[in-house]
Amino acid sequence: METPAITQPLQLGTEEELKWRLSLLSPDDLLRGLFHNSLMELVRRLEGDDAVRQCLEVCGEARFLDFFNYAHHTYIKLLYAAAWRLSERFGNFEKSMWEIGYEGSKTFYASAAGKVLILMAQGDPRRLLSNIPTSMQTASKHVECKVTLTGPKSGILVKHEVMPRPHTEGGLQAMCEVAKVKGAKVRSRSLSPTDNEYEVTWD
Image (cartoon, rainbow, N blue to C red; front, side):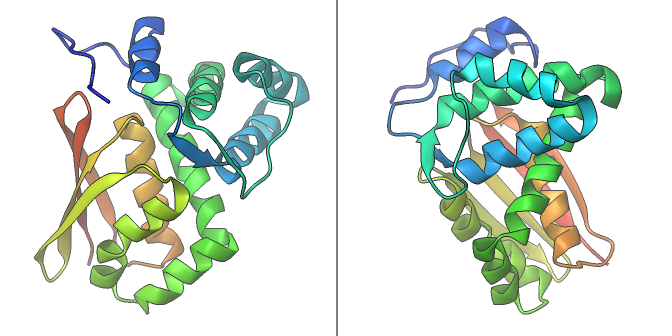
């Protein structure tokens, strides 16, 4: 699917930016319900059941099954509804998006599939980083990413993605913490509207 052109960066968290992001998705872009449920559990814990119902109304779904695949656009709509709702609590929309990515990743790596991926790394941060493309493909069927190990304690992930950059950055930070990577830090930058670079370092 051809990416719609934009003449200037859209401000993260605006209605215009959400519509543009949704336009990048095709009907066969799918995501596991585990991530929807993790997001709704975070909203429920922080804002209550009424907030969950309001978010679900936005995407037109009543419930999700963890390992059933849903159209990716339902998660994006749910994600933005939740991030708008939580923005005041976390400080702003970008921080809210980071926290949602962080919590979602913790939930994924606590699942059976996530635990297997952590075990495959055998406590080696370099192996953990190299396994990221596999873990992301487990979560979503349509992911393009490349990992390059840049040193004994560093690596770079370049990802072509629909998800907002703070969401992915928070998810990578959580992955490192779940895997007990000492002193892990994730820094990111945008390469293009749909391509982002994530630098992961550790002690």
